[in-house]
Length: 464
Image (cartoon, rainbow, N blue to C red; front, side, top):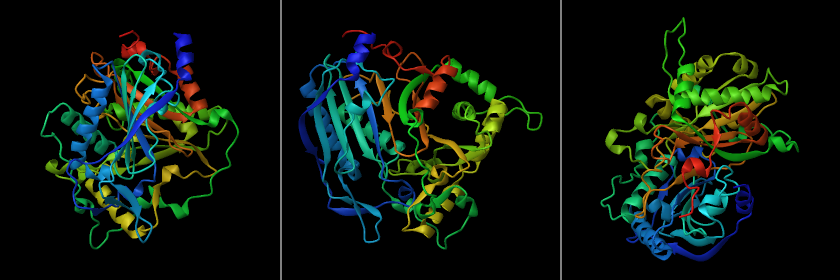
């Protein structure tokens, strides 16, 4: 399949139609402020895509998607608005039913030819560049008749939980499976700061105003230091093996069971440190953060359909030498420790108050602050609720789905998601956005654990 892969790398996508889809029942124009937790997000765009085998007819697919999108935007009206800065320079959503840019496209490549292991060469061409509004959608028909549905949204408006909820509802409406199972809540009052504000110094260790960021380090011309994206899979039994190693007993604390996410994150942290250790920077610190969703901590069960960002990024930092020399169980314990501090209701209430104190100056997690003594840093965001087995628009489940988040900056990004291979229960698909050098090192060191995603694994290496 080498020739096909080479040919697919240079495939072209042609836009055949552009439209703006508005909500079927528009509300009166109004302003929706961003919450203090929304304001922690920089203006970055996130993409997601789903690949489907050939449906009955592309034209009916596009029309079905547009009609159901118009219905979905009635409930998810924030996605049909625009982001506008207010008098103090903070963004707010103008809910004016401006609508969603909807592109229809053709690609001269077959589904089985897509090099999904390299999403910068494949997925990047099948998701839209968002130019207006807060959400854009692209529906692409491939040469074999297969369909790719790609979406790009503004992270300041929604986190992955919110986007997943929207995708699930959009698919339900498309299948005429109504009423939708999750109605989004835009009750910003649930994230209001307390009065009086409570100052907790622990937040200062995790976040900082952007005005306090150090000057960026000089970039090198070394191609190995360029951030790039790759997609891998890890089998359920390999994850269980990592979890066993990460949960080893300790004479002090007895046996401590670690989650699969903690175990995998610790495993990856050791690998990134080991790669850095080759450059004799053993005393430098490497930082790793894990994104935590605060909905279960902050909200009652009936209100956990809140739409927006409810995220925090706790992180830890250790010398590269320790991360290399200590066992996986020690690293996973350190991961567990910094997570424990942020999985409480008090942490999120303190974070909301902290943002209020610093407004209107934007803030950022300190994991993105790089000083002279800092080694590599990356963030792990759990995509365990990624709805790859739910986004059926009426012509079957996707054979592949993934987030695509090639953000700028020096820190890496990792997103584990459930595998779309339905008889591979417990397998993960893992999106890695790390440096080329780190990715090559990981592939060389642990090819038996993290395997490049391919069409054989996804069972789409056939003509349909």
